[in-house]
Image 1 (cartoon, rainbow, N blue to C red):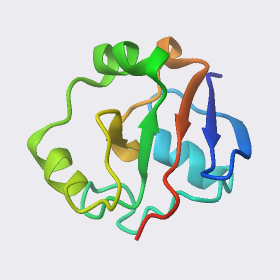
Image 2: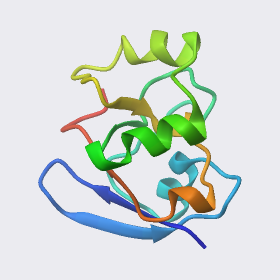
Image 3: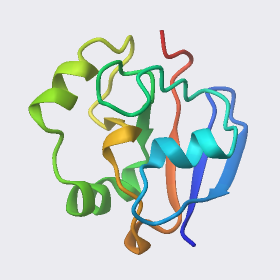
Length: 110
């Protein structure tokens, strides 16, 4: 099973096993990772699963998940502190190619 590491704003890291075919957001929720709220349940309707993709993973996430679609880009506009590497974790599907993915979380999701 691929592993994903979520790094909280304070630097605390949580490495979890993520089932292929599910979203990075669901990997966080099912493993009780703090900092991913997922208020909409993964419907790309709230931006409370906002993460920053670590630079060394940006190209691979782009290749696997594609560029943010219009709905994701729109939802990201509601996030408080977006960066060039911001994504909604509900829009990234876990694949074997993403084994070892590292994402950082903002200080807050609201």
